[in-house]
Length: 287
Image 1: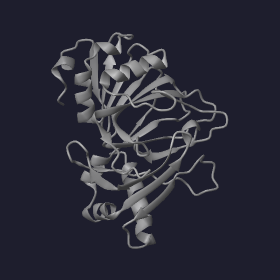
Image 2: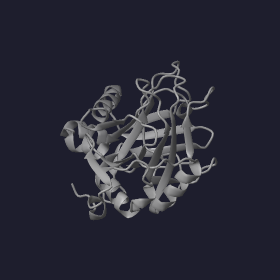
Image 3: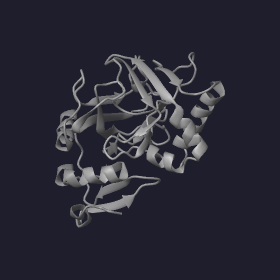
Image 4: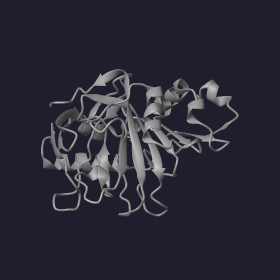
């Protein structure tokens, strides 16, 4: 494990390896400010391990504090609502991000001008034990490394066209399922997992189409095999939130989603997106 010397020598940290991927830094003295940790070292750890959990540090009490912390990492992505997305169930949600349902695997920024390199999540309030609501992350580079040649060839022939309309955008994204990491070229997967058929309770389905396959049986096998691989325990990390947790992830490699949670549970996350340097223009954005 190549942990930056500045952190390795820090006696105020306890470092643990997460399974199947990721790293956790625990504050030995609870309440230690996050700002004491050098962002350059943290950034390197996220790029190496794809996911970094920061636990038992001082709470970022207000959304403005999370935004300011994100700015230490780089240019923060701005939205019509500002820089911080408040992820909490709404009484009558217009979109599934504000509901309590399962959220399919996807990558952030797929419908926007720039794709963020990092996501910073903060748990304001845990959903409570047994209520679900874990945020799920899949290591797509690892998925591709372990895929058999025939399955990988099937995935490599497919291109997804994704259309989504919501309050903040009305956009189409076109991307090969297998593509290259924009910085170092490692093969990664860009895929928006289909939701259940219309008629269920899922709010605001995206429209998905896939080309490059010979027939419907190949399309069915594409979705079956991708789901099996992305959710395989050897590639999937499901984060069970504790109040105060901060999780930083690398969005160029991972796909992420959400397990359903009990309706009315007090699950409250905040999210900030940090652009790369330079910002990555979305290669798949159609409009």
